[in-house]
Length: 456
Image (tube, rainbow, N blue to C red; front, top):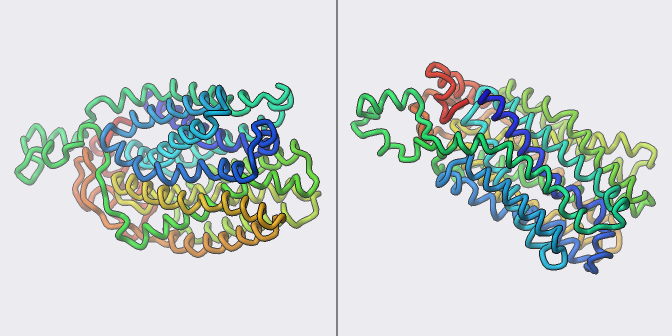
């Protein structure tokens, strides 16, 4: 039952990771007119979520160390509800503050979900990452599909268009409550409990002194920024996010400049989400079974490049196919980026630190995408230069993606707080990152499902 509730909670949070963002681009022109916004302001609105992701992601792991991942995630989903309600209730004054609060909440969930999965259920990490990315894709589809019909049917209601995603976010908060209660209980693994009973952690000191955050299962700080592998993962995360958010923000406008209607442009954006669904479960599971993910990386980046080229330059009759290809490539890239934060980490503590670095720096890099594309279009009056720039960033994505996909592992920092596992046990698989995910679960299984940092 506990595992079922955990899966439901992860899916509920995942559903809310993109919809608040994808719901706006299809109606950017309408919002610009209704709220009397300049082109530069719309460009800043498109870039704001990614900028916030970069700033807030740096602090997510620190929050989790202080309060525990489960409770921080509950606070994040509640903050998402508040931000969406605020920008819908008073768009004139709270459009940007509400968007910033909602984006900050999403940033925290982006960082902590992968490390939480690594800690709570490491032997099924590939499946669970795929599951929440699937939910993320569904939320993105729903957000982009509903916006234009909602705008039309409500006579151009800015409040509903900006705030309706608060409803699924509020439901997710309710579904996550059982996990927050789990996180508030002292979760001491059996191996650690045995050491407690013996009065020693193996080095003559009580376990509570050696791992002061063990009871709450909170991740330690790991200096992953010292290693080149961490930067390969980080830059790949940044480039795939840059290309994704730039196309998310401006693809509808590009398509409308070619003569497509607002509704059809929104539908094509939603179709990229359907392409997302086609690979969201397959890629992480396949990646976990491979020592090297290079064989997945090359077709992933090619799909992104070909999908963009087809939508922008090919005859409009093939737009559906190109949208599906683009979406499949984008989601495969996201799945691999998130997978790398877990698979390149020998322990959950390292995964939290790598995820925080990759998303903080990566999203700051990515924030340049929507802003540059919008400003270049305003300056040149054409989409040619911005689109060529996106192809250049896609090439950078390929280079660093291949580097991150090689079978390498960050150094083992020692046992995760609360794991009761010493070096060379769970996740000590420097030559085989996929095995690193599996071995963490196997090492803990001898002590029962709760022996990896928390209850299953």
